[in-house]
Image (cartoon, rainbow, N blue to C red; front, side):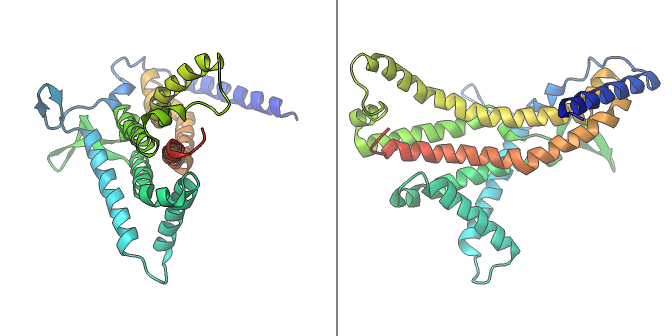
Amino acid sequence: MKKSVKIFGGLGVVIALMGLISALAPSAGRNDEFKPVNEFYLAPWIDIHVAGIDLSINKAVMYLFIAALLTIGTMLFVANRMAQKPNKVQTAVETVYQVMKVNITEVNMDRKMSTTWFPFIGTLFLFIWFSNMIGYIPLPTNTAHKFDLFGLEIPSFALYAATANISVPIVLTLIVWISYHVVGVKAKGPVNYVKGWIPAGSSGPLLILIVPVEIISQFVRVVSLSVRLFANILAGHLLILFMGGGLSVILGLAALNVITVPVAIVFFLFEIGLVATLQAFIFATLASIYLGEAVSDHH
């Protein structure tokens, strides 16, 4: 049997099964009150406003605080708790350390520069990785819906990732963007640094096209680096939300969970097993590339 036949046959079975479920379990009606995007709404827990700027404490701040504590704890462990005969935990930590030190930092910078910037790149990788991973741990953060526990009103458990809020990736990106420009200007001087953006051998009328493109590309990096992280994490959480029950609530068809929940579990495992780590690796690697490129002799 051809692969295409199997695929379309499988889709036909799924559609038929959905039709059968709809017939056996009639819809309770569309739920217009349920808003999936509310899972990402940042309700203020502690209102703080300074000079018109909203600095309120909310669940995003809590997730960032947890990620920062985990990052600091890991770095301190690496620095102070290493033994000559490593156990399983130390072996795993050393493996992560090698990835950060060799595969991310040293391959994109010379030895002196990689020694200087490794703490920054390593911290960046761990912070993003922890932020992504704890985003898949249900925590009592949904203050809009509470449940009673021995007389206490406890917020419902929900999934949320700080990196699914565009402000966090943008701030991390701006730190990287400013850092590599400062390093480049310091190493080469302002004029030579800007000249380094132009590919070798470019001259004459070609520069009229290349120079604007290269200048624009420097600013496009802010968008591409931040949106890549934000979009991947947000998309993963939305898929889990809809497949894990959101779609059946919107349609008023609880029996649909028979199909969607297994799909949600697959998405959940895929996000934890690959996407969370891959996005942290990509962000840290690109940061390392930009820093190394800023001081290199050639474009």
